[in-house]
Amino acid sequence: MKIVLQRVKEAKVTVDGEVTGAIGQGFLLLLGAGEGDTEAITDKMMDKICKLRIFQDENGKTNLSLADVGGELLIVSQFTLYADLRKGNRPSFIKAGAPDLAGHLYEHAIERARLYVSKVEHGIFGADMKVSLTNDGPFTLVLNSDEMGY
Image: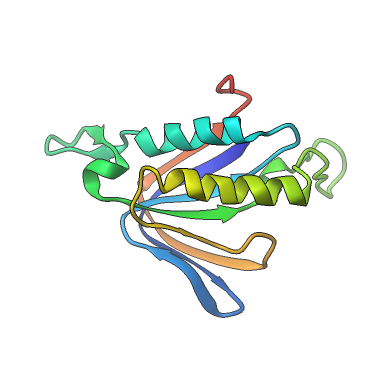
């Protein structure tokens, strides 16, 4: 599983001109599920993300979690995180999870996040989505379950 996490002041996702998810302060997650990913991997990734301490405390140190600041989550599926650009100029996505697996893990990630965060918004799996955000910092992290040993 690959996730791009952006700490945001606000973010929203629209489908066909309709807002399907919007948050204030929190994290925007772009989530890609790959072949071989499981619910257990998804759980570990979401647990890690929801416990990350990357908001500033009263001393300006990144020491607070989403829960500490009452932060919110917006989760958007993005299979293009699995683009393979090694050959030619057209990306290959053969390492991305099959749509049925990826869709299931995307929904599972949303439900797992709700164990930690009171407001979890999301896009629509497989839809043509437009995402807008105000990055805070900017503070962006890339999480890869393979590199994290999950």
